[in-house]
Length: 390
Ligand SMILES: [Zn+2]
Image (cartoon, rainbow, N blue to C red):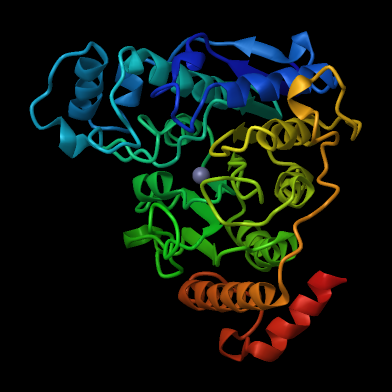
């Protein structure tokens, strides 16, 4: 294996709750096709791995939950199965879901093992199912593949950062490592006041000896490229400097895009990409996963751009005409960013500034922000905002 690996596992394409469910396997298939067509992915990048074993998954999820998934997957009735999260319309049980979910985890574990073997960046676009809890399916997620990947990475690395740019809070990973001081989870997301899963507030900072190792950057509705990137920059670089991670697990949910049907953020493809660019610049090994993202005209463009950045290769902006989906959208970059009314922008800034202040104040006993946090007032925020606008 070289410095970059694109990990696949047979069976991930069967991770599909129904033909009408938003988490459609096409999201990954189309992204992969576009990336190949545009010369970002070559045959030599592909590494095929085996599904994860139920035993490995049971080290992160409870054995009883894994067994329930198995029985439901075989079409058997499990009394009380509702308590495991399968009653909601988000996660209806389907035949073969055990194998499909193990395949998704297998590819993320394969990415973790590749990085432990010396690969600089390994990607599983089918992964990033960050909502699954220890004993509960949630938000389209059955097994938490990023959490299992982190579990494997811990065999080699002492300090791991999980960075989640999905528009939804990375709650499952956060709670699974909430008491683990070796894992710093950082999630930048639309506030739980407006969006599933309803958590991810600035006062969720970890527990026990892991206090200070959970960070939540909230933004309000309609946050655009500038607000999002300002909030990211205000928090993430300092946290990396403080925590000194040895490896990064990057969840690249593409649902902050302005065309996404399930959320309210207003990012462009190129605005969202800055997070992956920044991570690559840190020079650390990276396990990258996909995640949410439900706009089929945006997700393949965003993940193609992200793959190019992660691999360190250039990609042209123009989409080949034979990529039929894009009769309307001809470029990877969004040429026409959404024009937000000034009033919404102003509200968006206020929300983000407030949330960043709160986060810094909650983490201040653990993280030295390099500034007296009491004095980080409106004036400083105004200044930072001016800088961000330049
Ligand atoms: Zn999401």
